[in-house]
Image (cartoon, rainbow over all chains, first blue to last red; front, side):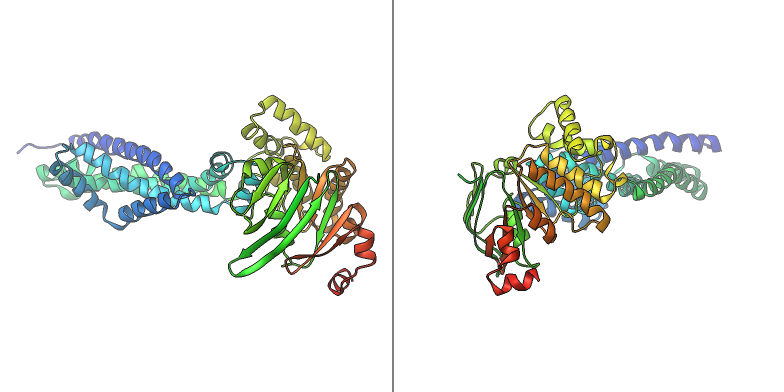
Length: 216
Length: 239
């Protein structure tokens, strides 16, 4: 058995935490882009598109993320598609994140008063011009705080991908804990690192909420 | 040829008919006031005139743009028809000037420079030359409504619809908005307005339309409508 010093444990965890940060960022960005596309379809005038997106959102919100990861990681290879843990993790988290963000943002779009749609329509703007210049800029202001709030959730959700063998922070914690037999210390440190990542964001979300609450 | 012509316009909300065959003609340069009780269909009619409400039967013809129950080129219609709303509905994330510029640049593809010049000119016209960079929440209700008028005018519409534009205002702010409308009337802008300001309607209108239960009950010059109402309903209403 190899002896790990405290510094080595911390170093190992911090190195793995980089993957957690990267995974969070990538899945949040891809999820955000897909979520925006979903949003536009969700509030579009096409009934078919609206129903399709609603189904997508309900499937991904109505099933555990863990199961979605299993299906991507273990299911896709059966269809002849080879997926690495990193691929599976990003894919699964993207589906999940996009569904939640689209739904959060839809609420924000609906919070924009109807008069804004009517005023922009009366100025002869078409649907996309209305969305682009009048509705989305206002919805975005409403969306900032809940979106950052969901970002915190997304960081913590990346812990689940440790199950499919992706070596992010939680997985590294398990490995180091198994090697050192000091679970309390190691998992405590893991929790501390998650907290250090999330707490500033939580504070930021709260500050944003205050800022935009009163602002135009 | 009249600028605005509706024939047999009908509209139902569910099983409830709100417009029961509206024939309305407005000549270029005319000022027409639509009066009537709430629920008489006057706001619905106004909203139908720029396609905010679809119609179930009949037709609307405004300066060459045609709308009926099956076909509506809303873009063409709305380029002819400006609208001012009761609640102003300014875009709160844009300054007064940007509010007036937006549709010009987005819809008409006017250059920003030209749109800015037109916006400046329109804001001057409604007496708000100094408020170009103010946000709506920094303006009074009366000022916001005047920006909304400037925003509609900047699109150079053939006709301007005003939907109870002073109803949401504090009494002391009504005058400044009506003053702008009056100056537009003098400049021969074609105006159709739904209003509760009877004295104002009487003073500026060429024609007054009294709506009752989804129909044009009575219409004519203001002296006639207010001075010699011929139906019982109108007599009750103007009293």
